[in-house]
Image 1: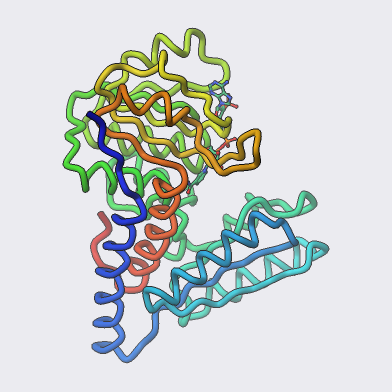
Image 2 (image 1 turned 135 degrees about the horizontal axis):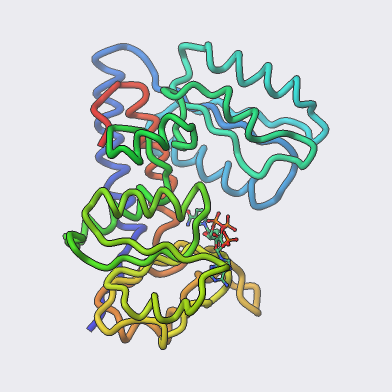
Length: 284
Ligand code: NAP
């Protein structure tokens, strides 16, 4: 019998808790917590993500500062904007929505975000600290996955965890978090040979590939915990994950749905990171 991990519910509970903490912070300091969100260009998916992030700010009591920039903005102009926000005391967190228009050098722009305002956990210092198992701002999606596992009391110690995907924003930090939680971790990617052989050994299988219904039931061990990070469109244009949910679920002990799984947790962890940057509360 499998259990569906309800990311929407867990995220909702976390947001309520955060809302109370943020309101207490505002009461005691007389200050707002500010998050700057920078969107350059008119990528429709990015527009939806930014809208949802601003909505989550409203829900939790964080003041959002949205910067909608034209797609023809120059590297110099966007760099100047990031530098001025970096020095603005009202703003505690800075998020640059990716992907940026192709003519812009995203890496150079992200490097201008100070570590302490790096709410996406993308800076070399924050990633380095994560690798050293220290306190750091952690990339929102993998951090959200860890919170879901924690919420379900899933013990990772000594478990075989397989992460499919090695991107800087999901796969790599996910693997680090799992290592820090004492799991035995295998990271697979597009050059991995015999992918299925790795997957069937996984007590915890995390799919972050970006290919609709890629993980099929023959790749999943009986009783595995399956976490689906993917956000794709199926042949009918319907939102779906990287896991063939309907056929895989019967084999799992726990599984996350898409939508309503990892997605809502990601934005919640962004709010959480913004709260941490503002309050200096211990980062966990
Ligand atoms: P990405 O940067 O494109 O990385 C995809 C990874 O999958 C790469 O490491 C790639 O390997 C690997 N891969 C591709 N084809 C493969 C194959 N046939 N076998 C094994 N590995 C393969 O994507 P991402 O940014 O990590 O995102 C992954 C998915 O998560 C996407 O669907 C994205 O929309 C979703 N996402 C969701 C959230 C959320 O909040 N729910 C947040 C972020 C991302 P190589 O490194 O060898 O190319």
